[in-house]
Length: 80
Image (cartoon, rainbow, N blue to C red; front, side):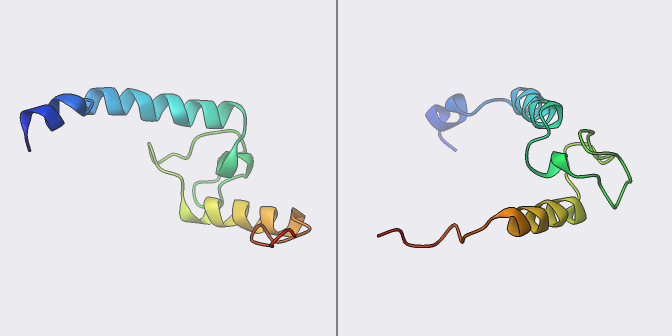
C-alpha cells in the first residue's frame, strides 16, 4: 500500500468509533433491522444485538419480510 493511500484511510480506532456511532443512531431511531426484535439473541426492538457490531441474519430477514409485506408495489417497477 502506498503512503498516500494509507494516510487517507482512517485508523482502525476511528473506524470503530464510526461503526459504534452508526449502530447507535440506527438503534436509537429504530432504523432498518433495529426496528425488529432479534429472534437469535432475544433482545427487543430498538436494542443492539448481543454480538457487538453485528446484526444477526434472522433479524435482518425479519425486517426484509416485514418491508416486503408493507410495500404495495415493487421497488423495481418501471414508472412510465
